Length: 569
Image (cartoon, rainbow, N blue to C red; front, top):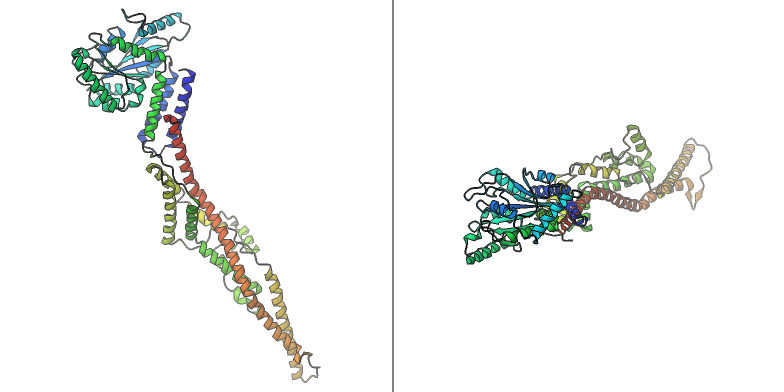
């Protein structure tokens, strides 16, 4: 095949091969197998002689194709009979022997007759004679590949012998040009049309139909039968296929059939046209279930709803409440009245109870000593997801998959749904890791804690100092020591003012810091929620959204490959 003919075929074969690979597990196995056979068969055919055109004569029992084969070749090569099939194995008439051997081996044709020149008595000026004569002359030169023509007489397509039917079916998928021989009695045979002509309707560019035995009909009947045959062929998708009327017995129409075969062979493009038809047919079969829709994909709102559901199922709200409680508890330990701080210290930190308190030096040191400081191996102690939470998460994943696949064919929608659940087993563990590895700032306090802490201790020291002063004065009076009276301010003794002021200031600080603690807890909770959602969103994108988007991209690539293979662009 010429280089300019190979380029489009190369492109379409590559596209068909790509579509076949992309369609694995998503398209019917029968269509995939057929496409793979086309690619394989095309590769094999193109490695063989590109200068030979292979013409196959197909027909039902009694159609007279063997007689027509003999008439076409001008030789009594095929044994013909009127009442029973006589062609048990394919037979080849070969013009231009050079390079035909490997091609015939591939066709599995053992009976070979090498011929030279046109039949005796043929017009030396017609296309058939000039074509065969040129091959004979070039083969004598021996210095270049002469090319040639191979005409096959094949077993009956409706033979009672299974092997005969199998051979005819196999070669109908291998020859370059298909010549279908019918007779006036069986031209509408259902087997021929349903099992051969209709499935091969895409090959109309390399198909000829011959109504044989017209010598048995009157001229009026010939016209009637031809009209009926063309009508049936149109229903098969072969409305524009050339139809020839011939008689192997009288020679009527044989010369015209020779000219038609010669013209096809002379173009030397029949093999390429046949392969292109095979590719188009296989591509149409691959896309038989493709409605041509475009999947909706996953929008931002759908992804946000998915993250919301996974966050709820992963216990994000529980963690956020724990962050708030932890902040308040730690703030109480650091800024509360020192006398009652012990009450806060005996309460367990809710984040530590959930296995999420890793922010302070004590927890880091403990994790390093136990080898568990790596967040990838850390696990939370969150309660196991409830059935309602699991149902909510499953429903969200299903809704995303269903919505993303809207517009695609059912087989690809199913593939999109499978992609959404492709990491279903690992998802709970990875969501737990996302929660456990989120930076919650649990070990970080607020800057103002230090100021309030200092003030609280100063207030407590003032109250203690005042109590000690008063205690000394009371003890001295009890022992009847004469001490100077304590200094006063506006009539109030300073020790008393120290006690009262220290206690009152400590309580006032506690009351004033309560709103700050609530505000800080809320801000810390919002930060924790953002970080937790960010981690869960990353897991959702990596394990659900990206597989779905990858499947949608695969479907798009499949459709582009089909379009390229079928010639739509």
